[in-house]
Each structure stands twice: as C-alpha cells, then as structure tokens.
Image (tube, rainbow, N blue to C red; front, top):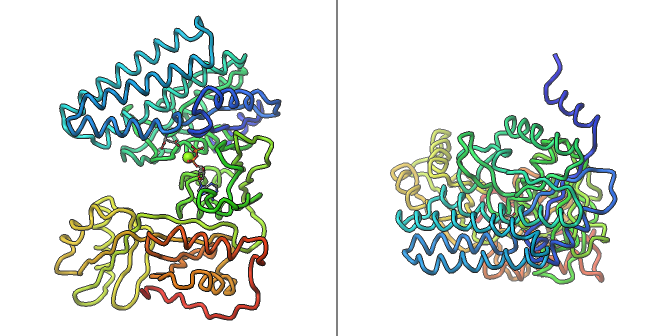
Length: 484
Ligand code: ADP
Ligand code: ASP
Ligand code: MG
C-alpha cells in the first residue's frame, strides 16, 4: 500500500513547486516595509509563494501589556493600548491603499478591535490573564497583519488569498507553547493551500498561531512565526523556506552585541538548531525540526537588503570550526542533592516532578553526589523543592547566562576550548556543559558578564587579525561533568 504522505508528496510535486516566504515583525512594521514585501513576492521565481507573516513589530508585546493591565484592574490603560494599536494599523493601511480600497479593511479592523475589547473586559472581570486568554489576545497581531498584507498584495496586483492559520495549524492544548499535531496539520495544510496554489493564488497567513482540535486558539511560543513557516513548508512539501528578517542572515553572533559580526553563508540544520536552542533570536528554537525532517533548505534573508545572499541552512554544512556564538540569559542553575544517595528512582522522581510543574530542563550534568540542572524560569522551583523534600535538597542560583560556541565537531578540537578559556580570562565560568552534542561547547557565566563574554569570544574567534582557531594551544580540556 502506498504511504499516504508519499502519495500527497507526489501529487503536490507534480503540479507545482512552492516557496514559503515568512516575514518577521520588522519586515511588516510599516507601509514601506510592506511595500518591500510586495516587491519580494512579485520577483520572478520558479516557485509559487506562500506568505507567512508575523504581527507588526512590537504589536505582540503591546497586546501582552494590554492583557496584563486589564488583569491588574487598569482597564482604561489597557483600552488605550488597543486604541493606539488600532490607529497604527489604520495608518499603515492608509499608507498602502487608496480610500475606496481601504474601507473593507477598516471595517475588518473595527470588528477585530471590538472583539479584542470584549476580551479585555473578560480578562478584567476574571482579574487573570491566563495562558489560554493570552493565546486568544496575542494571536490578533498576526490576524491583523495578514489582512493588511493580503490587501497590500492585492493592490500590487497579486491574487492573494487570506488563509486562517487557526484552521490549518492544529495543536495540542499547551497554551503559549503549543506543539502541532502533525498529521492533522499536514492534512489541513494540503486541503487548504494546495487548491489555492493550483489556481495560481498566493496564500497569506499569520504565523505564530494555531488552534486545538476544538478550535481553541493557541500559540507556538514567542517568535513562533519562524516555526509556522517551517510547519507550512513541510505541510506543502515546499522547495525552500525563506525567513525574511532585519539582518543579512545568521551572523557569527548577534550584531546588536558585536557590530562586526559577519554573515555565515552556510550552516547545517543541526548547527542552526543548536544556535536557536541556545538563544539566537534570529530563529525560533523549533524552526528547523519540520524542515530537517523533510530536508527542505531554509534561507535566512534580509528584507531590507534582499540582494545579499543570506544564510543557507541545509542538511550538510561545511567546515568544522566555530560558526557562531550565542548567549541565553535568565538561566538558573539548580542543584539537586540526594538526602541519601542517587538511585535511578530518585532520578525518575526528579524528572517527574519537574514535568508535573511544566518546567522544561535545559541541560543537565550528574556526578556521584549531585545533579545539576539548568532551567529558564525559577517560578516553579519552590514547589519542586517542596515535593522533593525528604528525598533531595534543592538549591538554586539565579541570573546566570549560558554562552555557547556552535560549529560542527567543535568538541573534537581541544584547541577551540582552550582558546575560549583564554579569551574568557578572569570571567568566572561556573559550569561547562558539553552536552551530548559534538556541535557545541557551553559556558555558564553570571548574567552581568554575558555580553562581555560573547564579545571576548567573538574577538578571539572572528576578529580579522586572529586566526579562527589556534592550532598550537595545548590547555587540557577540563569539562568535568557536574564540576561547578
Ligand atoms: P523577526 O522579527 O524578523 O522575526 P527577530 O527580531 O525575531 O526578527 O530576529 C532577528 C534578530 O535576531 C536580529 O535583529 C538580531 O538582533 C538577533 N540575532 C541574535 N543572534 C543572531 C545571530 N547569530 N545572527 C543574526 N541575528 C541574530
Ligand atoms: N508576533 C509573535 C511574537 O512577537 C511571533 C513572531 O513574531 O514570530 O512573538
Ligand atoms: Mg523572530
């Protein structure tokens, strides 16, 4: 019997080849940005585009502020935020279209903001901004931007069709960090997008959002539109996925920290996934998963500098030195010390307790006497400590940052670790985690010194006067697991 996904893959590829073009917040931030987007979609291409958009820059944060204000009983200021957002969308629309074209869009906006106002009233009445109501409120940013972009594309002569992402991306009910239910999502994406593409239309949909099987709105986590693009790309068997953003591609580090950061022309899926996992905001951490599974190349490109070649992310990267450096702040180190000794039951119990409190564990090392965990939020730790009382003592230290060097096989080259140590100099490195992966070396430093650590490492590995890797270094690797 033919595998149904194989059959649909064949069916899809027989008719057309497509590209998913995702535009982040800054790439849709105002009328000029949306005009650039239209130019990019209109560029001659052998692939039919599917457009995925984020909310306009900063809108999601502002919706979040409105929600929290309403929950805190400041309904007036919450409503003022909505008014500002409403005006901003109207201003952008006015900059993109003539009076008669814009009136349907204005009435769409009016309806949407009426619904948002009702949501704020409900949040204020409940005095709580629950994860579920966050997902309903925050998703409006993408709904508004997709309408704006569809209308702009139509004005530019593109036969753009609005697609409701909540009807296509089916997720579990883990509000604010939902995971797609792949089979249903792929089926729906095929059912909705393929006929549009076949008829020559350009589907436009909001990123970041999904809904449960029952239609309850969910979101994929902050920055999740990248993930949406990859989900859609996998669902329609795209030839490529393009992430259009505000930098020239994946850089050797965040250019906000090091203005001399350089573009990385090519990376492997694994390298880019590690970089995203360890904090590089340029990609949502889950972005590469669907692309990797379906072997679809991902390009990170600059919508303000579209002629720049960007970064190509493919199955096999090239080179084996350090490709990029990243840092992740807001990490806490948790020490779990057994009251008696470590037994496998205790390990299981520790994981269960963290799981019950929905506490993601970032990294782990174990020694004979204790277990060291890294977590990105301390909110549940008092409850975790209480549950483990009698079995283990739980202590934690906050305000740490994980600084990470990423590149194929960096661990196989001891000179890289020694060069990094020398660069970090007097910075107190509290824990060195090499994890299971050969592609990264991570250091735990005080949050207050994270920027300096990244800058020093960047200078050591990427400054033009220095070789990328010093071959002669002989310092021993001393990454004793759990030594902190
Ligand atoms: P978008 O709104 O397009 O999704 P984001 O703000 O989420 O864009 O991501 C782009 C930003 O990621 C850049 O402006 C840059 O500051 C940051 N960034 C962090 N690390 C890197 C890196 N290694 N390469 C490129 N950009 C990075
Ligand atoms: N608008 C959402 C956010 O700001 C999703 C995204 O931009 O990718 O988190
Ligand atoms: Mg982003």
